[in-house]
Amino acid sequence: MIVAERKTIPELVEILKPHKKILVLGCGTCVTVCLSGGEREVSIISSALRIASRVQGLSFEIDELTIERQCDNIFIEQAAEAIQRADAVLSTACGAGVQAIAERFPEKPVYAGLNTTFIGILEDRGVWTEKCAACGACILHKYGGICPVTRCAKHMLNGPCGGSREDRCEVRPDRPCAWQLIYKRLKDINQLDRLKEMEPAKNWNPSLSGGPRMLIREDHKI
Amino acid sequence: MNTNNFEPKIVAFCCHYCAYAAADLAGSGRLQYPPNIRIVRSPCTGRLEIDFFMKAFEAGADGVLVAGCEEGSCHFKEGNYLAKRRVNTTRQLLLEAGLEPERLRMVNVSAASSQKFVEYVRDMVETVTKLGPAYSKKITPKEQTGAIK
Image (cartoon, rainbow over all chains, first blue to last red; front, side, top):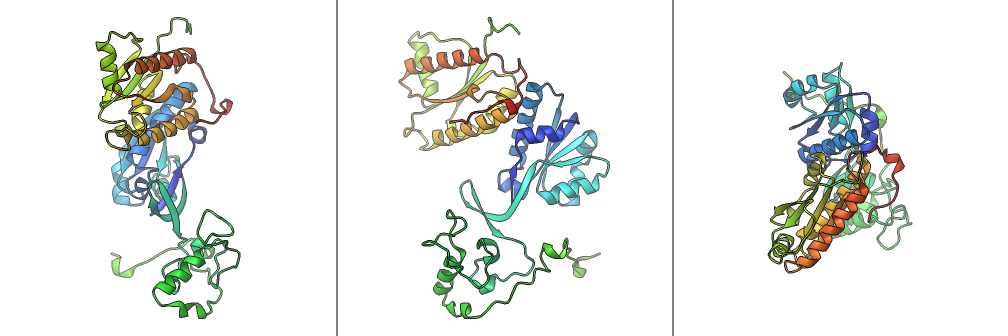
């Protein structure tokens, strides 16, 4: 899932200052699961903005709405009326959702209420960790399902770097060394031989370095 | 605004298993405490969400008191620990929004501690009275400093 975190209320107030009628628009998918931009968070952010507005003598009129997915036209339609009523939209979706709304309502200012952070998983209650960098050319099969591109701070494909202490990463001691995990995992599944193969330098063209990506599926086009 | 005669409005979320019973006992025992408190009974403080506190302030409360079981004796094992974290998070949010975090406080009382409950209420009322009405003055978040415990 996409993981995001809320911008601070002073930041949001600064962004929204020029406007009066504001729609705080939540998204019911990834940001709901990572507890940053779903219905409940929309309610909390809206309350905080109303309080800030009263305290600072601003005249915000905050409206709230959460739709199933902001990156999907079918669901965006459900928000059209509320968006039209507002002077500006504060979207608590990921960056894709914010842009999807902005593209469909060209005359409406649309702002991001969250900082979209990474693609990751829920590791523990209240803890999310990054697992995928969306590099566009997955090599997980070579590393026992542990991604060196994302989880090794040095992105080493022929690791380890030699700097780890015990099983901790040299760059971030609060994180495990990805190569320690890869070695252990490959040993457990009897695939240590894979480490004897040299991995050539990664082609970053399929990643963001090759410009914004697009996926076209002819079999699904109408 | 003249705050000399200021009577704060304080919402007290009380756990059914402890603070609410303590408040009841305070009544039975004829213990006096300021009438600024509006008690809302909750099945457990773990049921309380950040949104509840924010809505109380949004609706015009000058303070919110959360009263749960003593640590280690929650009827549902960990509800009061959950509430403690949520209260701390909400205090940070209040600070960001421009309200003093001291307006939100969590206390722990047992069902038998009616005297303690009364003292907590008096202390809370005193704190909020000193702070004044929630929306009487302008504070920009930049002017606010200090970490929250």
